[in-house]
Length: 113
Length: 114
Image (spheres, each protein chain N blue to C red):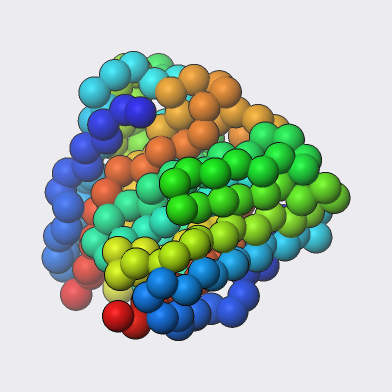
């Protein structure tokens, strides 16, 4: 089946630093999504990407849909303590909610004040 | 985006019993899904909740263990039956407002089976 690879499993950064997370796949996806999950809560959608090469920003977050459609990255600039959480990438075969999401295993981000 | 309410937020259940989880959305949505997140793991799709018909289950999940109802476009339930400790997980409701919308998640139900 399709798999999404996120590594490393954990990242530790200093407050104010930028951080970049990658997500790679062995197969093509037509939609890439990035979610953040805080403890005790469900994943919250950060950014959705629908076109190869697309670069989209949401505040301090920037994500790109790779040209090969097999990868995506998420950048967080000027990190703050509330950026702590688990970041999941997810891919869909087709645009739209009727297509199943495949999730990566997530990256746990820690921010040292 | 829609407001998704899941109940209960957490529960501790005994082995052999069942738990029914409710998902209520504040607006009509086209798609509703149920996911499982085992401790420290990623999210795995259990099934698609189809309005007015039987749910569509993913490989490894069966209706007898995870019966699902979706009587209308704003509400669904997931029952986890004949509980065992291996069922201890977070169960998440997810919705798509329409076919072109990304999925949004409820806050989940944290189930512990003793």
